[in-house]
Image 1: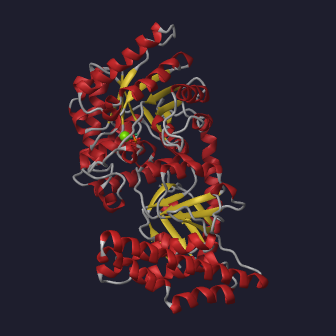
Image 2: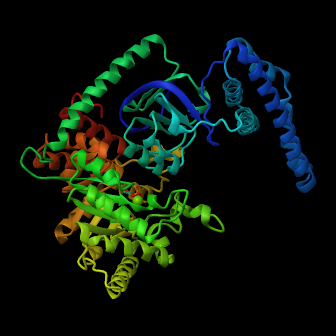
Amino acid sequence: MDILRGIAVTPGVAIGEAMILEAADYRIPYRTVADDEVEEELARLDAAFEKSIAGVIEQAEWLNANLGRDAARVFDWHVGVLKDPQLRKNIETLVSEHKVSAAHAVSDVMRNYQRRFMQMTDPLLVERIRDVQDIERRLLRHTLGDQTEDLAHLKEPVILVAHDLTPTQTAQLAATKVAAVALDSGAATSHTAILLRSWGRPGVIGLSDFSTRVSAGDTVIIDATNQLVIANPNRETLQEYEGRAARFGELEHELDEMASLPATTCDGEEIQLFCNVEFPHEASIGAAKGAAGIGLYRTEFLFLRPEGAPSEDEQYEAYCEAIDGANGGTVTIRTFDLGADKYTQQRSYEQERNPMLGLRSIRYSLQNLDMFKDQLRAILRASGRGQLRLMFPLISSLMEFRQAKMTVYDAMEDLEEEGIAVARDIPIGMMLETPSAAIQIKEFCREVNFVSIGTNDLIQYLLAVDRGNERVSQFYTPSHPAVLRVLRDVVKTCTRSGVSCSLCGEMAGQPLYTVFLLGIGLRELSMAPANIPEVKKLIRLVSIPQTQRIARRALSFDTERQVTNYLRDETRKLLPDDPI
Ligand code: PEP
Ligand code: MG
């Protein structure tokens, strides 16, 4: 039994067979073969080894001729591994005696091989893991040929285990039978995590090397509620988890009943709960979970598709679909937040050294005005169709906000000249995601119609912690006293200035912070649809004076640990039976 702790993206429990998705998208099914197929599988292996060795030698020769002997040397090691008679024998034995498919045998043996390197202390030998992975991929490519199975064609639910998933791969999960996901990489507010959250099934990420510890077909338990994954559980653990999965199902059912109840505190204060969406069809999912509208539509995901940037008309259609799905609720469209980990790096001539501090979000939009204007035209064309608001991401100075707003007016004029009606009074707001905007919030309040606090980025920039890097994820926390104080001050200034203020970072959907956020005066929160029921349940249990008392106390601590412990205790008192 192998137990690992990671970061939960969506709570829940799932049990199933592992399916390993390689970086090269190889799916290696656990498959046994009939007695009379063994010969064929062994022949397949022979051919795969031959082709792999030939391929490596060819690559080494090319390197030798073009870049010299040193560059070619690493491939000598690959040839040595591929020619190792013991390795070959281990793989063949699995096929001939245990009757598993050649691909599964390759995967199983090569993963064991990787594990051996991981246990070594010599850093040079540990580096060999990458080479072993490379050899495994090469062998699999030749073993599977074009038999790679498509996730979309799964017949049974599986637990997807991968080193990483791109946002595009993650977005495709909705159309598959994948029951839960375990990833080596990622952090709680990475974009893959955000997409997994909106997918809604259990997931644990940031598991460092889990994908190399399991083989296809192994039984895996995902206990996202406790941030754990367990490979090859013993019988006792498995039985315990079957019980937990059933109880979790009941709890979810109970929470579903929350959808039709108002999000009102027990002393009658109404809280607006909105949903965050990445794709327009999710608007109706949010409405079904009880969302009052869309608080954040991350439009950049329209661009992250194989076909590339959408046309103005395609964008217009997507915005109309979101407005229609929101059932008359307000829809807040954020102009595309491209850059950093999304879209622009692959397209740029030279990658940025520091993309999180680079040409991203509104900065990218203002330097790519044609693309920006196309989007603004599409939004404005849809503006008469429902309650639409428009906001810009990552505003860091007043000049930037003004320039973005001017571009909106330019687009309005162009449309009007073409005889297309637009809602001239569309509210224009900003996302508050940078320390500079937080410091200048008073000045911003004179110019914006509304503020939406993006804590995912705000925390990253306040605490100087890359939000997507699992190596520093222990430093990334909304509980940091500096974060709490900034939030309190921003909300206070917005309230005094009469500017509507909401919070749409992942923090809004974490029950741990709900009471605090109400206590500092927030009355609008936007979160992944799956988080709405539990947050609503909590809201209905507290009074405003109680939240204010708890917020004051939370603000009095010096360290994040004290804050987390205190908020956890208070939340447990309110929801003793819920996993927090
Ligand atoms: C945020 O930064 O909090 C936010 C909501 O935007 P995103 O997660 O898309 O960067
Ligand atoms: Mg952001």
